[in-house]
Image (cartoon, rainbow, N blue to C red; front, side):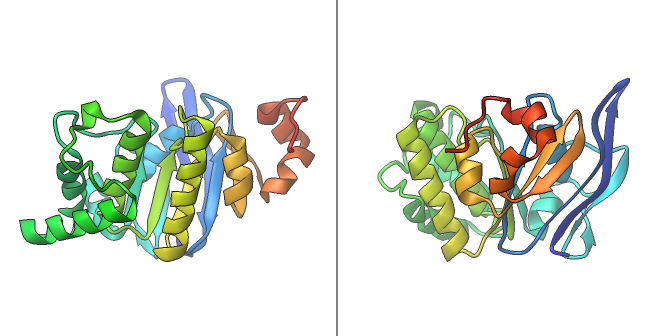
Length: 241
């Protein structure tokens, strides 16, 4: 199995954020993870990326157990994550921010600089290399975080609401960029997203999380046919068109 979550459970006192969560992602697949606010999606991502320790279960990537590794070592195995609110240093510029990601693999400045410039060109951020992060639009900040994540040379990329807060034009641009990354870099994705049209248009499979539990695994077009998903997340008025 390429990437697998087995029996992950996380409790905060009496609150169970994740309860025996099981899911898998095949190599080169794009898999969605959806659910209402508070369902435990971001907690699960934080566990995968080493920020939070689970109470039970394990994370397996290409046969290696990541569960007890720190974030830096998880990144070196080929797992990278972006977050709903871009985790960037506001006082740094675009080039510096991407170089930080490149140093995950690069051991000298010249190599990190070369990798950063190549990826900045790929994500169409050229001309903004010297712009400080706090001077960028939300759309460009999200592109920089995505580019910095790519600079770690991951095999699987976890995207936590990458499309949140973007207008329809920006969503379309980000979808196109994500598809290019998938196709040209042969990238595998696990995506948390509330923009349901993104899930419908990009994902091969979708998991639905509710109250910390997986309540469904299906193809995107099957979501509206599952009464548990409709009740928990889509709502009775959902229209797939």
